Image 1: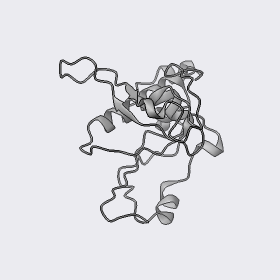
Image 2: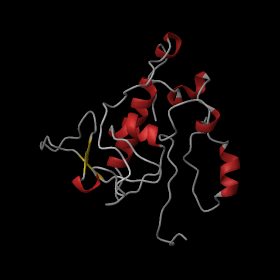
Image 3: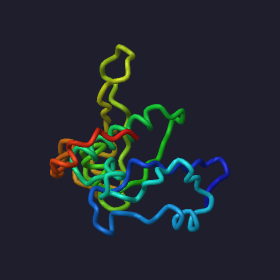
Length: 167
């Protein structure tokens, strides 16, 4: 049950990392009908397309996923709330956001790593995980980390020629 003070914002950036049917999502009109209390007004009308030129920012490629990861972090960085819960797919969180593995339903807690204290927003946003969730908050996840973008395919030449995604 949601409290009336709980805000749910559907972001465009966290879809999973492949164009397989299990990772593609449903047309937004279908999702709206199932979740009437959620504001979907900011969802990109192209969602869930990951294969046409219109859906280039959602292509299942290293370039697109890393760009979406940075766009998601930038959006979170500028949110006014002190605590934010992000619900997403483990593959996107690992390869586009944090470099950490997530077991189903496990969680991790992060702060933004703003180690350069000059006050300027870093060009590339990074996260620093709390020690208490190094194995996931439930203790189910691996401690192993990977570089952002690890294991993702590069975009085919015709996709690489497209302008970078703007989210």
